[in-house]
Image (cartoon, rainbow, N blue to C red):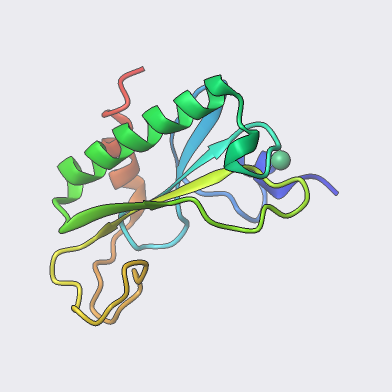
Length: 138
Ligand SMILES: [Zn+2]
């Protein structure tokens, strides 16, 4: 069975989502749907866990997360930007790091990963991805 994440990186398949930026090592994409401000930084290579990255991949991931955080801050003016490396690393997994905003006005009782609260901002994220993309610069 073809890998759905590899297909996504080619712009196809069930997981396809807007690509914000990519190079030969990592792909930055926006989560499908209409919640603005939730990115995935993924390796192109099949590697399940953080400790399995090459040094070049680790540096590429770190830069993409840092630029992405600054881009989200600049474009959405959120209360905060969070990032997490979590997951079980299932077979053929692509390492991925979550990068997402906490919008201003998020209810205090909403947990730090809660992005789907009632009244959360909604928009077509395609335009946002174009604006975020401009921050990567190369
Ligand atoms: Zn794959």
